[in-house]
Length: 254
Image 1 (cartoon, one colour):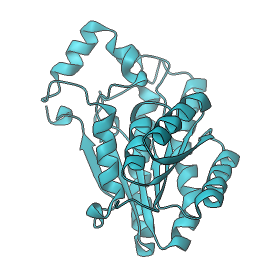
Image 2 (cartoon, helix red, strand yellow; image 1 turned 180 degrees about the horizontal axis):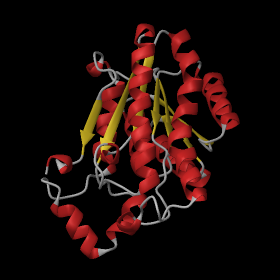
Image 3 (tube, rainbow, N blue to C red; image 1 turned 120 degrees about the vertical axis):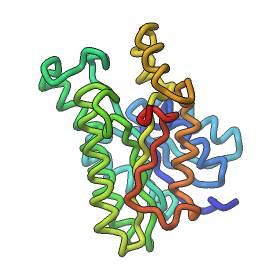
Image 4 (cartoon, rainbow, N blue to C red; image 1 turned 90 degrees about the vertical axis):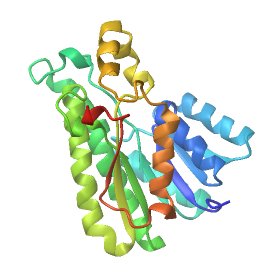
């Protein structure tokens, strides 16, 4: 298999895009370091991987913690001896639902929570993985952003700000580390069927309104975003860095 002996870290692997990506990479032969603050959930994902013949370990991981990132990198290197890909997927949304989340309704505490997990978490992952990738001769960093980084109605307030930051820092890393054969790219999903979007889409009127703006007429499945991540991690995308791949069913062109 083309991913045999490759090692991939996937954050936020307990559910949604992260779980789908962890399982997909393992199915392709990679050794997966699956992390999440919800340890029981990520352990269940790793158990499924093992039942299907894959190899993975589950680690408890607060992505906003510098110490946790160091522990994850150290454990991955101790277990597998190398790291080839980092998929920064872990993320949260504002407590206020999308239709009413604005600068005025966002309190300082929730702003800090979202920025810490969504943006600081990506920064810390990149900061800790770069020395390993440089020593190993290169690799691929993939950051899950959002169409909220590109349009004003793509998400709640702090979430949108965090995803805009991810979009920008990805390009910064791509520019400065390309000479080390390290690629950095971002994925910009629209609506995805995950626990994060479930609350908004329980509002039938909002669900109809949002779906009507998607030319393909539906939300994406987590697997469809995982497929994009697999492409960006693979040699098939070897000349892509600093790119932003939009996977939104056409929402931002509507």
